[in-house]
Image (cartoon, rainbow, N blue to C red):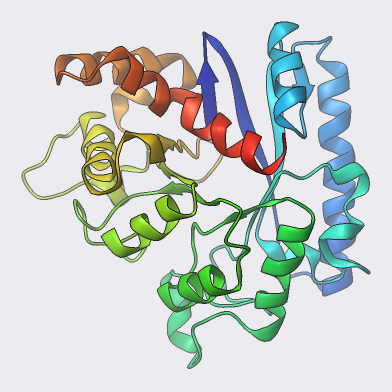
Length: 289
């Protein structure tokens, strides 16, 4: 779950993860079924949860005191079997699509070691078309998990007037790792007006001699600030992923720990608020006002 927070009321991107081992048709029908399940879960919450598809709907849900659900897809190959691609998504429900996940797909190559089995590691023609289709539907193009070659193919195919994002990642400037983004990639996302969400998974963030607690998250966030500025970094917890966060931030109730680390390191309240949610909300407003 990639979380955004502002003014004490929270929201998060709730990811519907794609099973890559189903058929094209099976992935699409399973996505539709899971989207129905998500809506039912929200309906059963008695107003505690509320789905938002736009920035205006987010603000309305906040005003009602709800936790905001921004539905997303983790693994764009859920859409390979859709009759009209992203345009087939009911009611424009999805706000973000991660182009590829942990396996290669008909759209392109993952950054994970699975990429080694594919000679061509960029986006396929179908992958480039998907980027264009997502732009047309005003769905955020998420560059987490993608192979560097595919990253740059996506940048080239993307509408330059719209923001790009990487919702949950670390940075190689702190921890060299196949899962993390380098400084050039950070600059590309910032140049688009997007944001980089810092994941909480210790194995992507840890470095020799580095902190053993959630300060490792802060190190990666500070590196993004150093390279591209404070307006382009966000929380990217990935709490619904198969990750192991540092012990002091193992649930969403522990965010004050991160805030205290930032205060202790001299960051202003305005900068901390940007990290906690203002930057992510700016991106949502830019693509889905």
